[in-house]
Length: 83
Image (cartoon, rainbow, N blue to C red; front, side, top):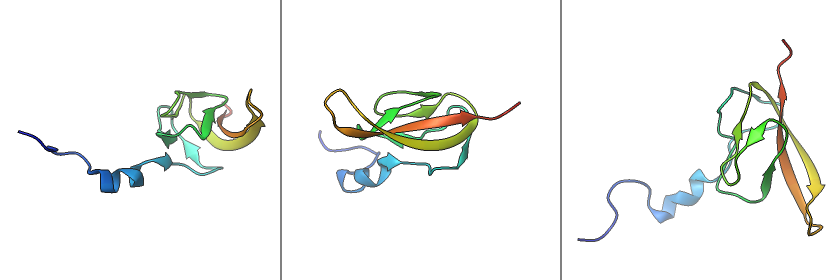
């Protein structure tokens, strides 16, 4: 018995990866921001490594910085809602 049972085929798997939100978009706590990527780093109020999720309700914004190897990476941040 072999083969794949259910799930996505490798042909369509690449469509599910990447950034799921855009800058300025409002998100709720626990919302998925990215899937399977090391191009993006967690910033303020963001948790995870390969799958980034929002730690609080707020608005998404992006910043760029150099990592320890002087490579420019994009950080995804969430600005919390004012209460």
